[in-house]
Length: 404
Image 1: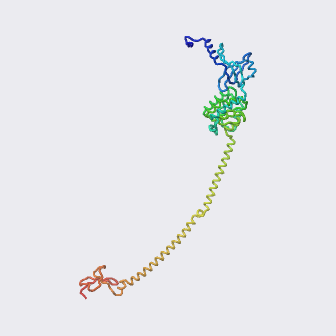
Image 2: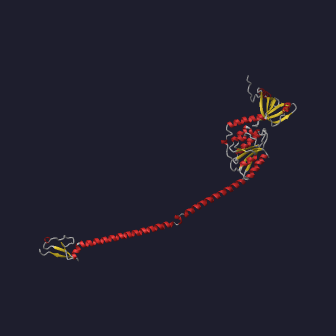
């Protein structure tokens, strides 16, 4: 039978609510829970512990028999799997997991879990080389996530500023081990990724045991790095230490010092490199000028350029010779034509009527004009006709008086 709902006029007493909650929690039954111990207070008879989720800011209160805690030699920061049943303390209204068995999570099991997570993330493509981004050549601001006053922070900042004094750091100090590490690192990572001035993010930590480096193989942290728009460099532990974040990051540095060398170039090396490039450029330019100068010298040494008028002079001589030859040829042809003309004139003169006239002959024309017809017979002339008589030295006009 369903109990009536509460209202402002018919509220439940605290004891009723507490009783109902206690009944519902009892229905849950025993459970196995994994987490990390953060607080441990072993009193006479009962020990009070806090079990925290390694990847989130969530915790549970535990109670366990003190002999069980001492038998297992439990310590704060230890990863454990506990078995127990939830109970609701009726008087104080608090929830607690009453533990009856505790199992420490060994290194082998932790490594096996990391390997399973590695395979999962690799299958999703988070380790692909194609998604990794190039680091900026000269970052002006570097975000650094590391422990407060840690050797890793000192190494990264000191080495980087020594190599490139113009670089600036925005340092976010977080826990680098323990239950607080993952949430704090995620918050710092998001804050640096939102900052437009930060061009590259470095996550640095010194070496440690497998348990100390567990936060850097956490799934939430790996996915947080994969979501970053800013390139991420990881420098976790020393060379043998390879947590999962090293595979997700854009660049994995062996040590914090190596990370500093990767994010900024060395000023001395760059200066020397620029000097070498200037020298190479100067030599290349001088060599090019020398080659062009030699080419010009060879071109100028050619006869056509060494004495360009020589060809003109040679052609001028040829032209003068040809002109003289042509003139002589024309003159000879003219003399030949003149002689021919003289011969023909003499022939014409000898055969023409003018020579006959000089010998006392005359040409009689019927009419007084130069173009009148020549009179060839006396019978052709009639009395009264006007005649034109052409002599050697001129012409006279006569008239016919009578027939001869």
